[in-house]
Image (cartoon, rainbow, N blue to C red; front, side, top):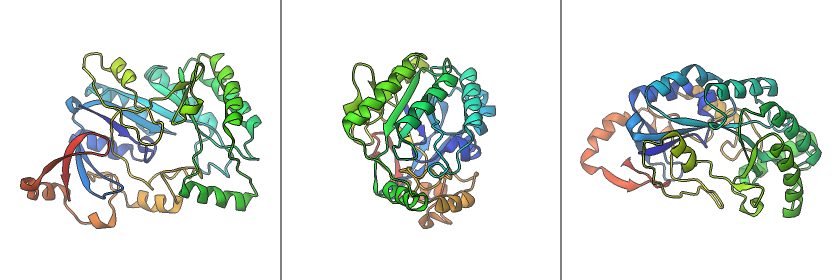
Length: 328
């Protein structure tokens, strides 16, 4: 059995719910390794899925189908990102009032233990100084009190694409982005911790082990303990499978694709260009077995190819530590 991550690479609930539900009905999907470009098939049969972890800023399109997933035997929980940056930084996110209402609906349908709030990443700039985050975090935590028990955070990582996109924002809006030192991060986090604690919310540090401690726990976003809570009937022995330094996640299969989320967050590590993502979303076929096809797979019948390559099929170790079927 495996955990399905849906998805760190894009927002499947917001933009690709129809595709996801079609793949659930079909019982499988394909995904492309973003580095090797090899294609993998992964079973989505209920008996093969230990749990599904959804990552989203807008689960609204999936809300009417949660009973369908539950009735079919799937267990799942959500990471729900909500910060509320200015348009210069988050160009196309849902209004905060809508996100708060959706968060509450989702929590009421599931439970406060199955909807994790992500205040992630923290971006410091002259548009968003510490005072901005204290005010924003206070406002959001006040509205989310009782609807979640966890808040996951990290500070923005200046990957190449992130630095380029933030640089464009800096030039266009005359914004200076800060790279806070450990002491500055710690001072802000202590204040955020106090706000969260007063509302029954625990802070979890995602890939920031130097910020975890007595009051802030190390995050395990793909969390075996949450999965065990959801599936007490199943023995769950999964290996640690960090996706980057200090990551605390256990192994999972991510079925998403990079450059397909159109929210347009300038700090995003998964999307370099919103224009590219918009084009890929237009090219997306909800009836396909794969979320988005690169040019090399256009016109390729993946099912037929699987049958033709059956005698050459090899069982390999996936990058995330899951056994799967590989074909080229």
